[in-house]
Amino acid sequence: MTQTEHAGDFTGAAVSFAGAVKSFGAVRAVDGLDLEITHGETVALLGRNGAGKSTAISLLLGLNEPDEGTVELFGGPPERSVRAGRVGAMLQEARAVPRVTVRELVSFVAARYPAPLPVDQALELAGLAELAERRVDRLSGGQTQRVRFAVALAGNPALIVLDEPTAALDVEARQSFWRSIRAYARRGHTVLFSTHHLEEADAYADRILVVDHGRIVADGSGEQLKRAVGGSVVAVDVPGVRAGPDLDLESLPGVRSVEVRGGRARLRTDDSDATVIALAALGAVRGLEVAPASLEDAFLTLTSNSTSDSDSTLTSSSRVAEAV
Image (tube, rainbow, N blue to C red; front, side, top):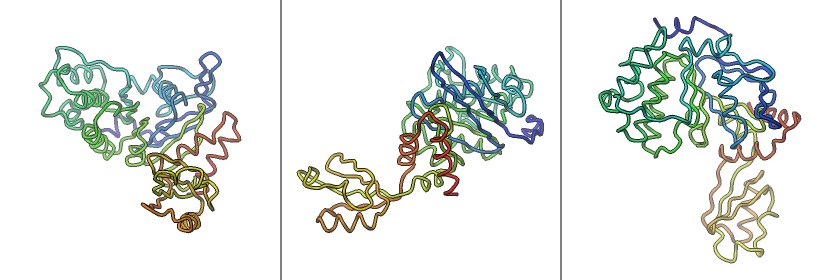
């Protein structure tokens, strides 16, 4: 059975939230969330701790039910798609199973689904073909993470959901993991991942959703989000006393904000030319660097501007639309 057949030739949205609300006591973790993800997209979910990312993922996987609104996968309740193997997930909480090999574990999970991915294909996609006969509890952290990925693939999913998939991995292990994800996405599958590594979202996501106070406050590609907040960053060395009150960087033309760290200043500015000219007039041009706003700049601006009211959400989202 092909992946398309396994997905039932469904042509609607892979993921759909419509006015979804989830509260825990007085806290609205998800607050009227509206969202659609189409087939084949790789989507990153960004947000501060407590923004509502993990709760949204739990609703998507059917681990919780919304208090209001609806959440659907492939046009039906999440539980149906999970049972059918259309959805695979890597969650943050997981422990290695002792005394079983990688192949035994993946084979066991695959057997629970009606139309699983062949075990050798799951191992190959996860980069585990050479480790198939190794015991799971004797693998490194990066290798164990690949096993979790292979287990998520076992049901032959059309959608895979990854909650902080590279947490605690070193740089080499992270790069290896994302190579595996890219191979999976190239087959036309849908990927939704949350991460605190903004560079991963910028590098691997077709689309980035920024969540704050349980709502989507920005939705677009990495470039669209960076253009939406506008401006540039001017970095310059300000050693010693020059970083003090004698150098009033915040009053320079175009400057929105200033951060000084380790003898180097980063100036967010709406007019980098005017800022640089003013710096030159002060004689403060050592180590000068001018760059467009980064995704980190965009993220911090969007979440610092966001409040719990709907007007703020609409303002942040419209910025992205205007930049398209």
